[in-house]
Length: 353
Image 1 (cartoon, rainbow, N blue to C red):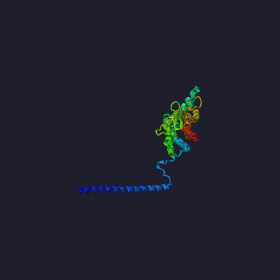
Image 2: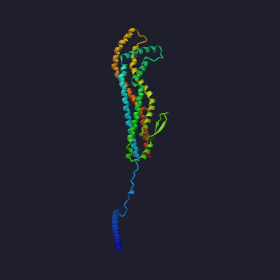
Image 3: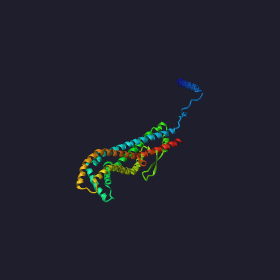
């Protein structure tokens, strides 16, 4: 019995010990919480009795986009892209014209000032002079020579089929250059003016351009966003437009270049053909005299006239380059100048709102 009583007493004492231990821990927790409370109260006094601002209540100040400055940046970007493209197209045409001048020096002038070419042209001129004398509706000797020289110039120098492909290549690379420079110039604008992506896309969509369609010359809309799309669709559309315009211009230009060169050549050969003809009828003795004179005349004419003729052809090719670049209807640069004008007008109209 005594043992049972001792066990009960031990259990009670253990229970009392646990209660006391828990009370001590509770007291410790209360003291700690009280200390924290006093600390928070002191901090509240430092804030002037106001509650500290909660972190979730802090909202960043969103500044309004300075769209007038964005418009000005767009204008600068477009103008720089156009200027860079004009310089690029000019350089590309310079390379092409350099190739033409190489063929003028190495092929056409060698052919034209060849002694035997001069003889053949002289005999043909003599024959044509007689034909024209008896049949006035036939071309004169100078006209027939001009036609033949024009044909040789086109074949040896211009090579119309090759020229067409070369111009298409220049147009394609120029359109690519314009779009690449414009995209590059516009890339920094959204970050500079802190423009959200959605608003930037909407802004670019607001620049509506018009460009001739490749079908029927119709005008089709083209936005600035579509023009500078990474897919390159804008460059493809521009190249297609320029090729359509050049197709209308190239025939006129090529014919003009050959015709102008031939007219300059005719000025140098017409008098010589007339001298060879010398009258309606020529006897054997006169013919031999012309042959002897022509050997000397050929040498003197080449030494004197070759640099003159070369300079005349070089000047004409410079004129041809200007036509291809700046023709009001179909010049390569004219297209980009027109697009620049449209974009600047849109930016100016936005700035007034």
